[in-house]
Every structure is written in C-alpha cells, then in structure tokens.
Amino acid sequence: MNEQTTPLVIADLGFDAYVERTGLDRSAYPAERIGRVVEEYRTRWVLASNSGPLDASVRGSVHYDLDAEAFPKVGDWVLFTALSGGKATIEEILPRTVIVARKNIHGKGRQVIVTNIDTVAIVQAADQELNLPKLNRYLSLVRESGARPVFVFTKADLLSDVEPLTRALSESAPDVPQVVISSRTGAGLDALLHYFTPRTTSVLLGSSGAGKSTLLNALIQSEVQATHAVRATDGTGRHTTTMRSLFVLPSGALLIDTPGMRELTAASDLDDKKDTFDDVAEIAYGCRYPNCDHEKSGGCAVLTALAEKSLDEKRYRAYLKFLVREKKAAVRTDGNQHSDRVKSNRAMLNYESRRQSEEE
Image 1 (spheres, rainbow, N blue to C red):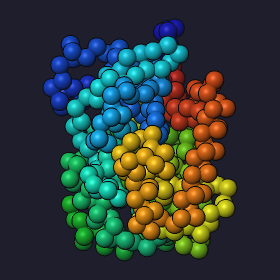
Image 2: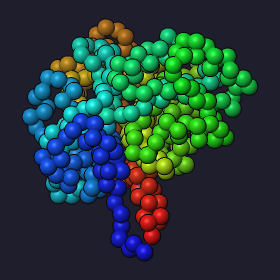
Image 3: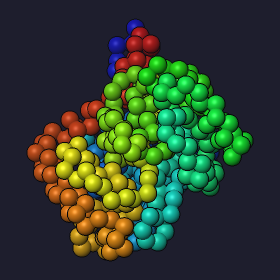
C-alpha cells in the first residue's frame, strides 16, 4: 500500500499536453516553479502547483503595463517564485495556446475570458427561448479561439420536447455537436463527458440562468458552486458565480465555470441581499487594471459604462457599497485566508483523495 499522500501535480492539470503543443523547453522552467491559475480575484490569483494551492500576486512591474492581457487569467500556466505562508509571486505567464476572448464591452482592446482550453461548452437552458443570434455570437467567439465547440441544452426535464430546439440549432450550425442533459436527473451527463476527457480543459459559457453552475455540481457530484433560482418573471438567472474558477471532475477532466455573460441592463432588484452584481462585475473584467477602484482609476470600464449611461447611477453606487463590504470581509478573514478557498478547491482535494485510494 502507498502510505504517502499523493498531491495533485501539474501533470494532472494538463501540463504534459501543453508542453507537447507549445514545444516549451522544460529545462528552462523547473517543475517546482510551474503553476496553473485556477481562480482569479480582483488583485490576487490562486495557483495549483506541485506543492499545493498557492495564493499569488503579480510582480509589481505588471501593474504599470497598459495591456490588460499582461495579467493572469484562469487557465494560464505561469512561472512563480514561492514565498512563505503558502504565497507566491507570479513572474511570467507562459505562452497561451488558446485564448477565448471578446471585445471589451466598453473601451478598446479585448477581454480575455479563459486561456489554454480544449473545448467550449455553449450552454442554453431548454426551458428558455432559443436565442440563435446570441448563440451564434458565442460560436464565433469559440471559432476565433481555435477551441472545439459543443452546444449543451440543460434543464431538459422541464421541457416535454426539445427536438424543435435542437433542429433549429442544427440548421444554424450543422457542424457543431449537441448534447441534451438534465442536471437534476443525470440524463445526458455521460454523453457530455465524452467531450470532457481526462487532463483536457473545458469551459462553460452561457447566459445567467442557463444552468452552468448546476451542471458543474452534477458533474462533480458535490455542491461546489452556489446557485439561485431563475426569476419566473423574466427568466433571468441569479446565480452567485462572479469569478472564473477551474475544477477537477472525478474523471480527471478539467472544467472552468464562468459568470453569466449578458448584455447590461438596469436592475430593479437593488435591495436584494443576495444580489452579487454579476452584471457589473462582468463589465469590471474590462478594466485596464485588476485592482481598479472604479472611482478614479484610469481605463475603468465601469466608469465608462456610467458615463455612457448604460450603467444605472443607483446600481453603480450600490456596487461600490458591495465592494466595501467585500473588502471588510476579506480583512476579517485575512489571518485564515485558506478558508475562503476550501469550497472552490474541494473538487481538487476530492480528486486527490480518490486517486490516492485507487493507488493504495
């Protein structure tokens, strides 16, 4: 029996395939200093590495770079310098093989969503009206990246006949495979896993309320992402995903969950305590600096949206108050920062435990 703990190593995160694809000179990049970005926060990143999860920041000079793409994104492979207390400094972003990006909602350039992925699952809820133009925009984004697209219809148990939807989508994009699933009953999940293979990386893209986080929970067989019900009045999702996070499925496949991507509309439910401002946070991803204060920083996409009146003044003020509450909460837990990562990293830990048990 193997009595030693088997950590989740970078090979489990697809590093071998990445090296083969890029021709990277491994001798120039020691394995103990290679990590993969698995979570992205405003001014910090969580890395998975051979020595375990690391709470990372970027070297100071990066903050003076005018190119937002100079900052790490979920999926990136990076070279880091380890510090004490489970912390690290990201020194270099390794070459990106695939970049899923879109034009900034406000401002110039593009907004990188995720990097170094193999498959993009474009998620549409079967019980919501089929929006072919929007799905085609997603498809164009995927084709431009070079990743493999697959359409996923969720919540099939809520519709008696999904054939009209799949037929309409087939007529629009006949070369793109489709999978119809129900996260509640488990129907179709095995077929979807055909596209999520071990040590490859996939990402879920879709509007809020499409069922991405519920799908992730079903695939992991654990409640790793909180979800909220869809509003019956307008079919708008209200789940709490406000950042991109990478998870390891029981099969060894890697899957990234993302916030809902939708056009910005004024919100009327500003006093809802569960409102996590995923719409404004999505705009904030377009800011020049990840530590943008959204009040006086240059290149702020949120201030641009406010000036263009595509962001409601009242919602903007509420968002600033929300950020203040977040900062206060972060200060309270600063002495025990690993606790705020327990839930998001649970899938990785479960995978390590399962693999160790199999080896024993």
